[in-house]
Amino acid sequence: MAEAKGIFKSGFVSIVGRPNVGKSTLLNTLIGEKVAITSPKPQTTRNQIIGIHNAEDHQIVFVDTPGIHKPRTKLGEYMDKSVQDSLKAIDALIVIADVSRSDPRERETIRTLAENKIPKFLVLNKIDLVHPQQLLPIIADYAGDGFDAILPISAKTGEGVSELMEKLLSVLKEGPRYYPQEQYTPQTERQIIAELIRERALFLLQEEIPHGIGVEIRSMEEKSPTLTEIFADIYCERASHKGIIIGKQGAMLSKLGSQARAQIEDLLGTQVMLKLWVKVRPDWRNSNNDLKNLGYWEQT
Ligand SMILES: Nc1nc2c(ncn2[C@@H]2O[C@H](COP(=O)(O)OP(=O)(O)OP(=O)(O)O)[C@@H](O)[C@H]2O)c(=O)[nH]1
Ligand SMILES: [Mg+2]
Image 1 (cartoon, helix red, strand yellow):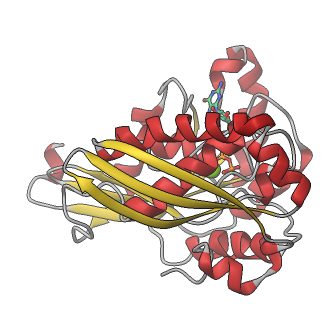
Image 2 (image 1 turned 180 degrees about the vertical axis):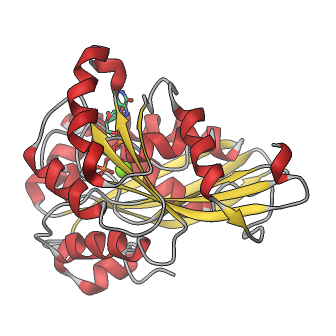
Image 3 (image 1 turned 180 degrees about the horizontal axis):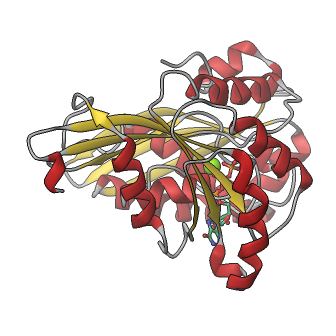
């Protein structure tokens, strides 16, 4: 960009919206790496996930957040606080709506978020699922809300994502490189691995069970340059859930383990020996201690 010559631009950009609208999918597409886990079930993301977009003349630090919902547990309150915290000290805001389904609560959430006085963009996601003509009334409906732009995109196919990036760059100001250029996330390998295991649980298990699951990496050891051994605990809330997670003769746990292992091997670039234990922790989502152990606590 000619006008940016000599100037290094940077900033923090939060990605917010209701559950399941595609915030984490967009983060991954923007970064070009799997930084955040995604799933067809709502309330997948539980805390702020940072993804860093690096270039020679700019750095954008994206903050993915949990979907905005009414908290019912301490974990829910923590998730809600993660969203509120992500709105402090940011340089721009991406608000996402899902155009493939209509939800009156979404309209209300977006109106509230539009009150933020920073540069803000409304992203209409999942356009690959609707006819272009369906977009016009939606755009018209949001037109008066004060967004700097309304951008139809598909986080999944990448359509419209480069236009969004250009819009962001046009509002970002001169600033420091907050993270080293080669870093695309500050999350630790342990954190990413715990999330990859949880993602497989979200895909493989039905309904409320995955929402009651937490994953703790007990140990991680490089046995050799080509082999990593990982022990992880899966917390669930009831003995009946434990039975379902383990499955008949261990079939479900073994499927979960082998799918997670494949993803972890991709991440680490070594072979992985993954040992999973399922533990019952009744009501862990309301226990300060358990939340702390699983990393759901004050983060800054
Ligand atoms: N067809 C289509 N599906 C999408 C698109 N973006 C996301 N999805 C799907 O929507 C579902 C939810 O995506 P996520 O990225 O996990 O949504 P999220 O907003 O992060 O959800 P929470 O973390 O639960 O708040 C997943 O099944 C995605 O594959 C899109 O552009 N098109
Ligand atoms: Mg998410």
